[in-house]
Length: 266
Image 1 (cartoon, rainbow, N blue to C red):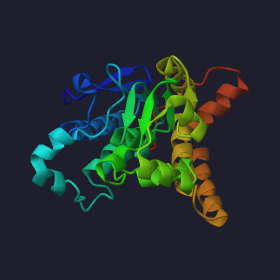
Image 2 (cartoon, rainbow, N blue to C red; image 1 turned 30 degrees about the horizontal axis):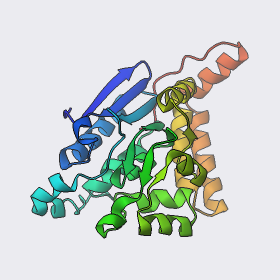
Image 3 (cartoon, one colour; image 1 turned 90 degrees about the vertical axis):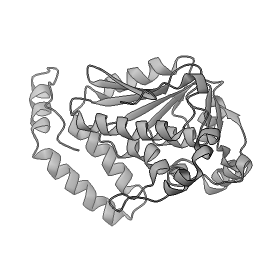
């Protein structure tokens, strides 16, 4: 792994940490690639049940490191091209890779969460922040638009007028307001402990059920009821035929703690 991102496992949990704290975990090209690699490493480990994503030091991330990325302008432009096998370019994939993981991702936010960092956090399933954390859809400050998957994730959480206002003004707001807007799941003085508590709770459930729930909700959230019902049935049939459903039934019948098999969803 790159020295930009560390991946450590603790039982069923993977702790993924951006480690460029001397630059407020600014997102340079190496950091973006390291985030993609970290997501791939987590996906390959089927014993992982949940991911806690955070930044070392006093900030989650101050966003894209324009000073570093701008030094290699040709490479920066080439990274807007997407590989033919993927729907995302490099910048989008660093954030969207976490959305595609078959395990829940919980982002822990302290300090800065600007621009690309906010889009990275929105790629998680849950976000825990301190009240004084600082958020901004910062691209407007540079005369740009959010382009690291933010248009897909912001629309899930905000009315269009609110998303437009934040994206047009680059307003900086704190964790309390982020929670009021619906961008943050929970606010507290120890967001890491809160994230780990939920991650540990999720890890007690069938990894296939959790993976299917994540994928199902993302797939049906904006489709017609008819399409949603079709996908519900498809995922449910797969789970009913799987080993982990049988393990859950047996454990519940015997009032025991279920010892689930490894996740089959990839």
